[in-house]
Length: 443
Image (tube, rainbow, N blue to C red; front, side, top):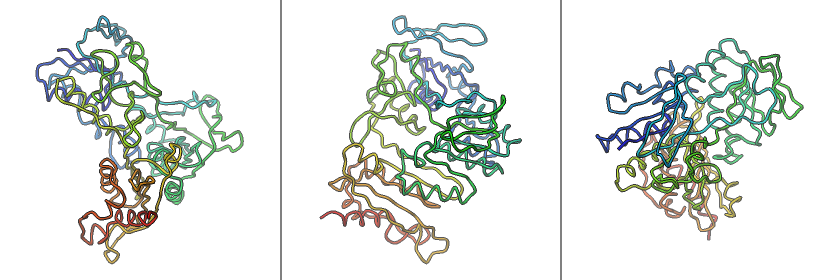
């Protein structure tokens, strides 16, 4: 069996590795336009900040490593055609066109950066960060930059803004929405993060889109909402990605609202063509509609399901909750499930409680404040949680992910057993405090 995988990101490489674990005989070919593989784009901001020493440190494997496992990775090529009738893929590299046949085709084409409509986006000094090469270009530009604007205040945008600030650059973080991280946090929680970023010296501009970048060949200034003008030696567009769908359309795959439609075995509408990663739609766990989950963790889970599907083993990809966690400076923040705003938009009347607690026993040295927000539906079923603290956020988000997955109510969770020791928690865990408080809003 010959398996061709288009895309060398987390979904593509992980799919190849997982197939090889299950089948030692099949032929696996990965086609990618990148020259580096097997790295986490999430680590790029931490190299820019100097926390991680080098981009080389975030590359886990080389094509030669995979070759030794019987996986042929062809880098720096562009796939130009897919013929699902002839079962062929055509790619171009070194000015040479090659056509190969497949038995099974995996589309892991990922996403392409979204460029908002603004004049001057093609000026020198305007960057997107999609891969390590982009990161290297930004790292080089940082050496001469005194001012920078990062537009798009999602996770990557915030992390890059903080990285540039750590390197002594005067940074403005802009977001056209009235708050940062709007998909994961409610405004009252994101305001905590904004206050921290501003205390560290980052200028945060909310609710004003950049309408124009100004400069003579190279960017010099940014114009916000045709009013405010801010100096910028460099501009980073961290405005998210859109699923790359050209090959899927060419292959005749059914496309949903945002991305490729797949079932819970990662099969597309075309026989022997599968898809994983940022280019597919997922099923939302709470309400069951289609959504997008452009997270590395989602891509890796999908790849495990797909590998089992291709190798004729029992497989099923579970619906998503888009759990996330990040860290900027000393502050960790995480979320899972619905925000209050998103619940209301989907005709759920949320019951919400925000509490303040501590990460350790009150009397134990270095106990840190923790803000927790719990969102329930009208029956008390937990549908969302947001946490901000200086430590121990990830494990509590994971706990709430499990609680939502299992359909627990705030009453269920408030009566559950949690481990305790003064150095790691309060005797009543902050999660328990939060669900106990929200429980009081029900009869």
